Length: 173
Image (cartoon, rainbow, N blue to C red; front, side, top):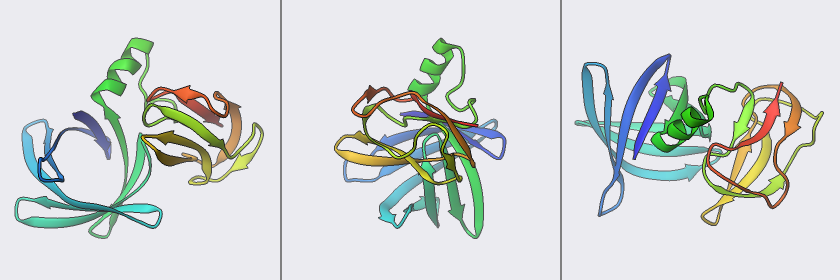
């Protein structure tokens, strides 16, 4: 699967291949540069997900927090904000006339699923990172959080609704 990763204003193309023995192989590229990486291990550690990646002979531990498409990544003492779009999500967004990551303050579903909890109501004030809505996908509950501090302007879905990946769920101002 191909992903587009925006890191510090630079877009990187990442091709992900699942390995038969477990783990994933990543092929990373940006203009004029290429690198290969292998995801060795991924496990949940509190709110963040701890992932060990090998790039050549270097081993890097990453802590990933947030929900797609916007993530916070912490590695080697540095924190970065990252926006991730799959090739499918990007294609669907272009057909709708926009980018899945362009709506600041709009929380979107990271994948197809079912809305199982709505933790806010219109008019509520929320802080960045506060839980907003829970979408169940593949028998896993994904708690989606506020992308910024603000006020809930609109809730686009209802409890029990089935949603597609990239669907608008909640708008914050």
